[in-house]
Length: 94
Length: 42
Image 1 (tube, rainbow over the protein chains, first blue to last red):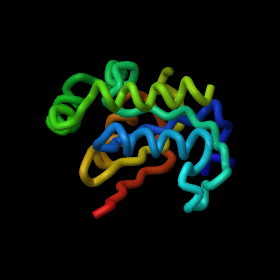
Image 2 (spheres, chains in turn orange, purple):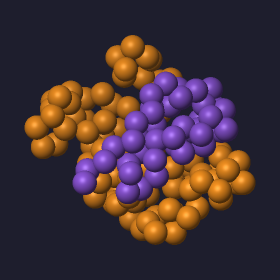
Image 3 (cartoon, chains in turn brown, cyan):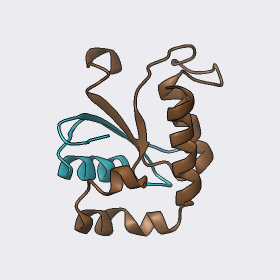
Image 4 (cartoon, chains in turn red, purple):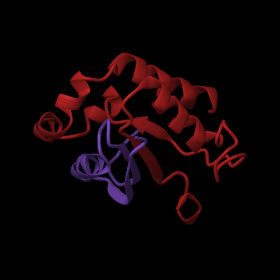
């Protein structure tokens, strides 16, 4: 999938529930599987990865849609930690 | 990062936000969803 589209066109949106799982997904999609156990071991896709609860993403979604479908789950998530984890991976691997 | 006009890979999780929800939100933000998955690690 990533190879059949221009990297500049693609964005990955995550819905992972914790900072650790978000970090793991982000690293895998940026620099390859850190556990070296899966198909993406050593494969640096370099994809831009964002979590849906990040402000940069959230503000682009119609407020009514976000409220109806995401806001309840967002309340159960550690939004600050998740956003920090994903943005740190983007910056570290930029 | 602008979602409008981009191609989105939506990777959801059953215990978090599911792929269908991510795809819906991305679509309403003007993106084209090219892959949508919901993973479950239970």
